[in-house]
Length: 370
Image (cartoon, rainbow, N blue to C red; front, side, top):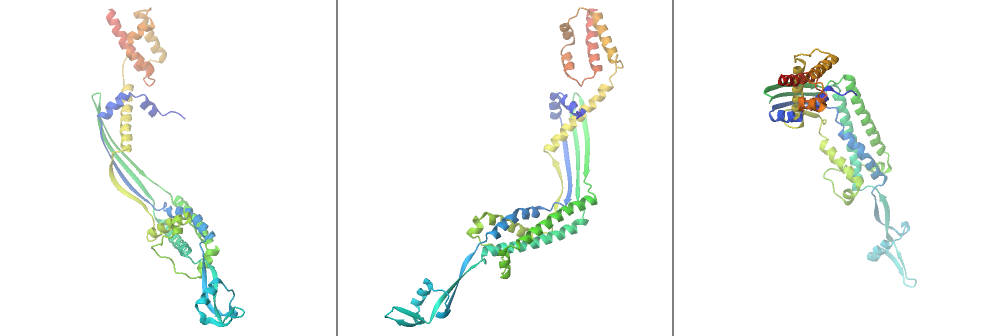
């Protein structure tokens, strides 16, 4: 890639010049921002995409407990005699029908029957069931908002105004700069962006729907339970289980944003910039000053200005030989002085300037000889 002339101009600049310029610089940068964007309302999508696998883990490994159903039944209807049944009978002797002392047998008329049943109707499972219902409602609401915003425009406008003054080498330098930018999104681009969002919402809805086919969800759904309402009980499982920790983050996010129409990225402000942007523009001012100095180089007049390269070299050689054909390189360097070394090292200096400096010092030397 070709190196920009602007880079060469800055790299070849005297850094001391830059320091002096900046020390004498007075500048002001004002920024205006007007920004509105409905197309970036995808934070909720990312949170659901992140959390659904953890909810699936909870449903695949559900919390459960055993329910004991106690019932006093006729002895012939008892399914199983347990220790608890005997303890109950010892406390309720009125249920004993007869006692056979010879055989040490007791015949009750009724006895306690305990039926144990496993259930998923726990607080934690009802909480996850409620969360899934909230996710459905939240996703439906967001989908409608995205479709409604199809007609709205995306705005992104910025305006920078910069005024600066400086003094360098008895020159007063001033600049008045303004820059404006305006985002221009076509209707096709907006539709494409909104389609991407709708596609992600479709994928979210499909994953939520898949959760409703897990056995635990279906069993709880049949119970017609009351949905959990805040505040949430902080049980040990909810506090310590990683899957529930992610689920509760999503719960809190939905609760905080359920009433919001949409998360509009909006910013409209005017301020004075004193940070990195201003420093960049200050340095740009210095580069503009360097560029203006190129005008001085182009407008220089004098002998040899229109000479070709070969003619200029011949001219310089003639001058040197006319002075002293026996001059050594060291003597020539001494004649030209420090300027010779600087000109030799600076690629940006034009050949006309080299010729002019040589001419000046050689003419001075000739005057001394005369």
